[in-house]
Length: 125
Image 1 (spheres, rainbow, N blue to C red):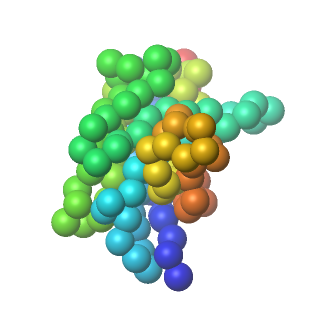
Image 2: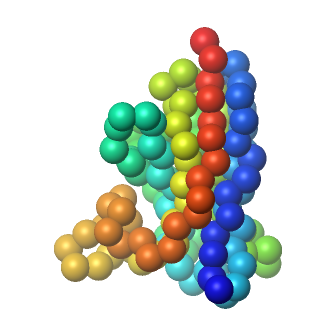
């Protein structure tokens, strides 16, 4: 059964760094677009970053602070988060899909077919 598993979440102070990992199992996701989304309590799930092949893309809110990368040999995608802020507090989810489908691009949930279970990131001020 194909699945994605996130790891690396935790509780940190503002200004600290964390690196999340999204590992694939059951099938290879090396040719998929991999996205990271986050969801805070009471809010909708929002786009954070994606890697399309080897090309990264970021939401404006994290640009310059977060870095997405892919290790194809390990079929794992990483999200390094630097200079974390309290507003980054959320559950973080990785997803596998395509760059574009039916009028929607990689920043939209609707192009993703596989989702991980999420990992919690809490940033204290």
